[in-house]
Image (tube, rainbow, N blue to C red; front, side, top):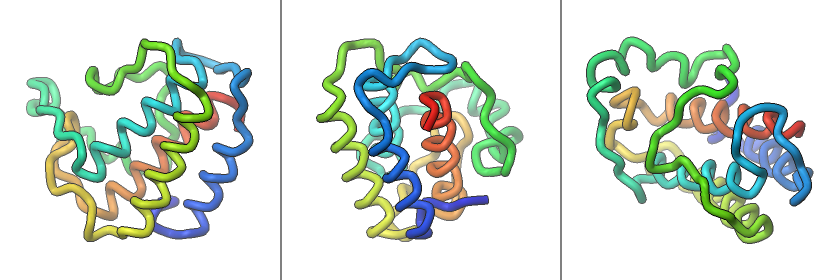
Length: 149
């Protein structure tokens, strides 16, 4: 499984983000490209410990049994539910969101696994830095494929 902490995969993700434009259309889902970038940026905030959303009751009950879907080799399902606090519905500026996401990815990669949050993922619960690294790559890959890059 690809891991965002490996520079090769960080560079690949950053290049794919550069290939987006404000007219990129989703193959599935309701978010436009700017909202998707803001969503991914908000997810980075969780992994970096800048945002600490509470665990929901469903995650507490079943999250630990399902958490390998976050970091295994199987693609994420289209239209999968998301953490409510990072569901973006407001209008966003494409260039600002793209640059902010790129900078967060670069910072996350440079800070390395030891800087990952120890706060539990809102659904899956406790994750190791390696699981976060794989999950972040998988999440970004999912949304970039959503927009054809």
